[in-house]
Length: 265
Length: 313
Ligand SMILES: Nc1ncnc2c1ncn2[C@@H]1O[C@H](COP(=O)(O)OP(=O)(O)OP(=O)(O)O)[C@@H](O)[C@H]1O
Ligand SMILES: [Mg+2]
Image 1 (cartoon, rainbow over the protein chains, first blue to last red):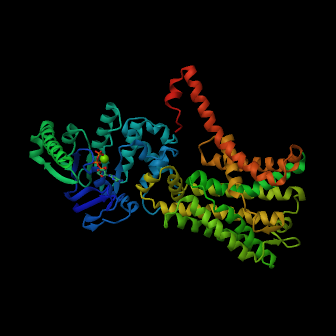
Image 2 (image 1 turned 30 degrees about the horizontal axis):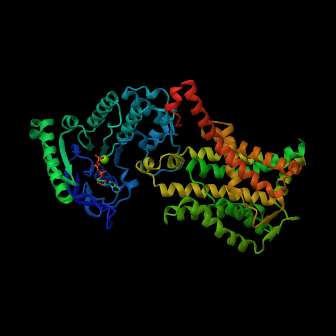
Image 3 (image 1 turned 30 degrees about the vertical axis):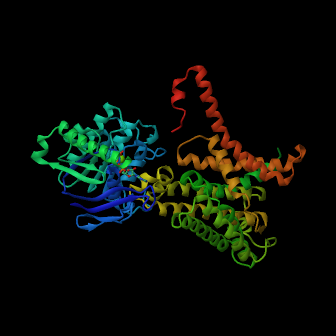
């Protein structure tokens, strides 16, 4: 269980540019939940994932995983049980390192020592897992990751983020930078990889595609100005459609517009 | 070109080659231009010379040089990762404080080793069947090969791969569970241990230690790395460590020739540093200029592929 309580994050605190990116945010996620997160630009979606992963530290609030308090744990330690895929395919792999080196780095995350970084057994495993992606990446494990296309890299990063059996998977618009074809393909890979672990993995996926948000996963939340303003799952969720979500959005937009005008006047 | 020039270039190229492998580790692998080396090269020479001068064993002197070099790297790593100083400033501070430390260790600016038993006399005893002229190059060749393979092996371990990844994509390797403060500190320690080792051998080879002998180590190290890597273009660690040692040999050859015959062109010995700095500038500028030319000519030839993809992966 992932428990987030009153999580609050400011940027440039106590300066004229202060931003309240996350405001008293609460969320309770069960094992096996696959949550899609939507919200307009600047709503705080990426900030939320960065706080869970430890890339950023909060100003207030707490994060617990399976009862353990991890709010201020360093990022590299949380990596032992968090898998991540970013929007930018360049962030997920080391370009000058080979496919097998990238995969090996991801598989062995804890207690790195003077053992050989890659062995034959690992190579076999990588070949098998890569072939399941259906992109032919298993043919040349020595190829540099920098020579792969964005879609291929993202598929590889998806594999890296799930292969080591994490407890939490964080996906931040991980299909947004790809062409529609690759985007579909990565989404399919995502669903397959999550399905493998559907009983014990917690998945949070940020997306701007509302159709996607309702089709994938079992729960959807909408964020606005750093808060969780809408949380839907189960039967209720099956009933709503994209139009409903759009209505919710435009309600917010109008309100924002009015408020902006008030501020300007 | 006479045999003696070639032999000198070979000897010096190999001795400095150990230092160049260290600079390669920081500059190319960790993406950290480490100025500590100007101080840690002298540190290795100072520690070894002090011990040998006072009658200690050369092996003991060399071991201490390695340890003190790694401590120097550790200190730079501490400044950079824990006090968050920039990589250049961290190196400059350690280099500067090492100048005083080195003077303290030696007690005077210069220690002569003439008449003392150095490692080179020792090996002459163990390898009697190799004639005098070839003994030193042979010994250092074997040594550099061993160090090269040890470094390759280290970089293929779990920690080694994490160090490479730190220089390649730091954000990624952090999100894969590596403490990048630690990987940087390990890389810097190892690098400066190699540089100090190189200094320890150079002091024994040249018969003295001087508090200024490390001046310009970073520039000559960078020049060697860049020459080697631009001549042998290869992505594998195995070939890259060979390439930088070859770069070191070529660099020393150029320097020795410039020293020997440069006067005919009006050069003085004091101009050597100018020459090596210019060498680095040229070596760094050539790929950029070449790219620029490729890019401009691609318009005339209608090479769309180059126009769109002139950024190298
Ligand atoms: N490093 C930072 N420094 C200052 N402000 C930041 C920083 N990162 C984010 N912000 C601000 O925090 C707010 C939330 O940003 P965040 O990136 O979490 O939004 P998001 O919901 O992911 O938006 P998008 O859909 O555009 O990715 C925004 O107002 C943003 O400008
Ligand atoms: Mg975002």
